[in-house]
Image 1: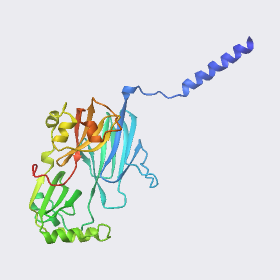
Image 2: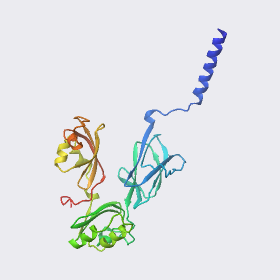
Image 3: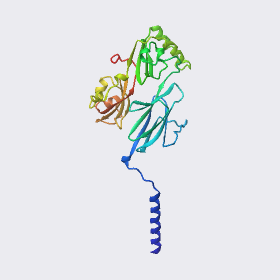
Image 4: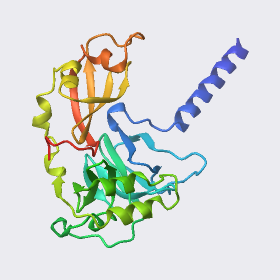
Length: 299
């Protein structure tokens, strides 16, 4: 009996020590989630408190999700990888908050920061400071670019200037189109050869895409619509998670994150577009610039 009592006293003492050594865990309501993501092609790193973000070339990351106590300080780092994509800015809720690669933030609520990377193509010509001064494509080729494309009739560049996104269009003839199509995209000199052909082209018109970004009120009208209605209106499906019913769809120049509800979640006999036809939109949010292809209805 004395031996049993001694064992119980020892266990009680050990439990008491363990309780004193365990730090207090914040209640769930005292914690927040920080999402760190990438737009374009690049990498991100994050570190809590006074730590410095560590870059591991062997295991680069394009996103982080951190559960933190409210009021935590986190340092973010956006860094480019080899290629034509350069770090441009950090955004929060679509608004530019910094153009420095390293950013220190205090997190008081669930938040997403996005490191934006854009193409520059290595163009060395002088770019304009004001959109009204853009006359030729060379005036905007060196600016951070979302995308570019060309057809038999036009060359299109979507770029950013002074926190606004623009779409510039230059008309070309058959000879100019042939010269562009003859370029070898695998040639190391492709970017400079492309710029040499495109830079002298006169800009036919420029559209301010930022001005046309749908508002919350604009998007509200889509709630309750079916996937079939979107497809009939020309929306294109680029991503679908059949389990969570989350989708990424493009319409005009823009991309949207959509949450569907209802209908069958997974039918192996259906393709993705067929699957969403009967689904209804529960929520929809503007995600960013999508295709730069021609859309006369929005020009």
